[in-house]
Image (cartoon, rainbow, N blue to C red; front, side, top):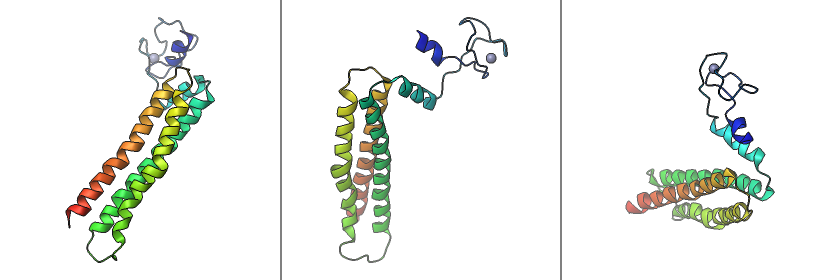
Length: 158
Ligand SMILES: [Zn+2]
């Protein structure tokens, strides 16, 4: 109960409602409309309320994994554009297409597994688990889409 009050403590006009009665009208705008906290505030709150170091580690891992996944997807897209631009690039140029899948299997997958184990093992209930799961899913899916697209585009041209 205390936690919920702490989450919705700001009026829609920005007035700080701490100390006010839950049903009191806002002295500033005269309304009883609360501001729903922004996502980064919510994440920060969940982080602060989480007591499991394992889950926190997993969450950080998930963010790292997400950054890695986006970078990997960017590499896949870049190599596709590179291979599709006209001009001879040498017989082995096509090998850069295999770099993103290798990174995905050798680096991304282990990090994802580690994150899921580390975050789901502790019994503590926290939204950080869900955030981590979401980030891991994004970090794995986006490169796959980029990689599949790059293969279809580049190999489809031959
Ligand atoms: Zn107000």
